[in-house]
Image 1: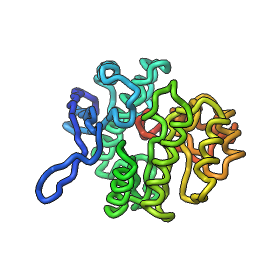
Image 2: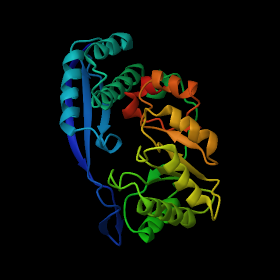
Image 3: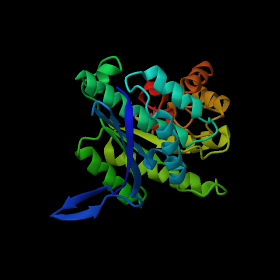
Length: 296
């Protein structure tokens, strides 16, 4: 069963909700560039995959499009059921220095598993080896806004069934102003959300590699916890993703869990994180890892 056609469908997605029949924006800056990939075979079986810049905001949309075209040419005419051959073709053209290749590859990887599952008449999870669970709790990332808006959005999401929240404490600050004002705003954002949702909802403070060194992160955490200890709080990616030594030091010295996400790009990177004991947990992103196969 050979691949005979690969199509891409760019979409613009806006997160919104409706109150009294009137659509309203949930958060600021929610326009998302998304691409749907459709792979068609000579047996008329099709598979769909997706890549969204929501999970790769530092990567150019143009770069993603270029890698979609590169992978499309590489897979043209390849046996759609031969995972080894398909991955080999994508490996042959992959440049590890290019950030855009991983999310683009993830889209094809998803489409291939979808296609194989359809050809066998089974869900894609069976192609991956079976379901580990049949239900899972949802988490969501809060947008920007005033402390009051963040608290209100957090309560609204929890009321809708969300059981975990992520609060960005790094990407809203300019890189040359890691100062007391940054500490204050990060602290106030987290306190607003933590107070709004209570201790049963997990809250992750995502620093997006913002802080320069271990000392800065310790100061922030000490300031946050001096009045109250939050057992439901964790800290994600406080330092540069290559600073595994710094993250390992933070893991040993902080009283809250350290989570890594930006640097979890391959099985090899996961091995290094484990060797260095650099994290209590990882935030595994399908797009960042390059697809379902690599993520597994």
